Image 1 (cartoon, one colour):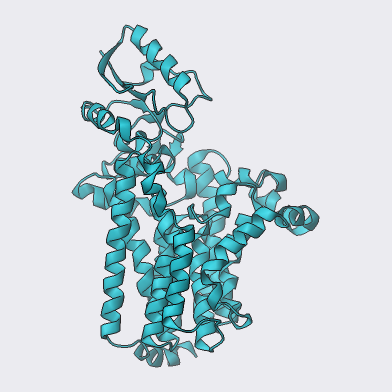
Image 2: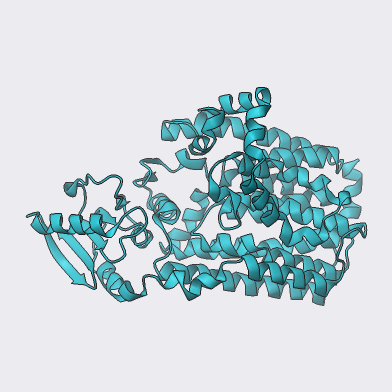
Length: 474
């Protein structure tokens, strides 16, 4: 039946209109704003080794034909999340190796989600002004802005890809649907669970048999291959996030078993104030458009939300980090479903945008540029001058915040007070900031390391200013 409807549904997509042009202009402006914000944060030394330096180093090594072994993690980048998306990203580094490519890609793909949101709304029969309002709702959803500030994460690419897959399924474009699914799966192994849930929704609720079956099969297959073969092969251990669910077991198999056989243990974790607060944060930006008539699309958000409420890891329970991104497309779909049957609480364009703007002002972290991101301003010039004097590709130990500026080499590590034993011979450079020692370090540890290097005959002090020290191997 799908093939018979393909032509009619494809024609249902409206032609280019002034409203579509407005949508594109808003998207482009948003991409520019997002890029400027993330690049500015990086310039102010607010990006970190985890995760920007890890991903930047991996993409750089791939572009140079080297094995992308992360010196920060100690294993191949595919052992992290089986994210093959880093290989096509490395093509950009062939033009010029720069971390700003990652910021540009992130800004562009995050902003492009507005286009897919608008077109899905158009296809569902909503008026052009409401469709544009929904695109603005997407752009003002606090998580979109906040995750753009938090370094770079490959799963941001999966966000518009999920929306694109949904639109392709609605249009009966199976080929484009498969491409979109492939992109999603290449971003992170856990996204395969979201793909499976989306497939269930498409199969049961949307009656898209082929797309639903493809998504379910691809999601299950990739989850098993990535978690049981690829990640253990390249890292030598279980999936990294398993440790966040240690109360359920030490492997994916044990966790799945306890989820099914020990519901009391699970309920004790789910019923908490932290989870209640998380759910409020997640739903409040779109609460105006939710109703009992819009619950079916939320099937696709179940894996993401379940993983976040089951863990003790607090970073998965906010709108700052990337962990809630897979739920966003289905929250938007739920709103679109309510509007399409006239059941949303708010159906006025201005009221929709006003609600989104208020939640953005309350929950987006744009205020960080006025205080937190200026924390290292007093040593900014000295740090840049020290970085400019590192002329070779030799190994570097530095702070967690400086590491992303020096990741284009095979060896980069950051100072960690919890692992005070440092092999001086391993590195060619030590760039330390005693005044601002960085994440996982402290001024006492940084000063001890400076004193040790000053006494080491194989190192010389190459630069010193404003408590910033650069030592190089003689």
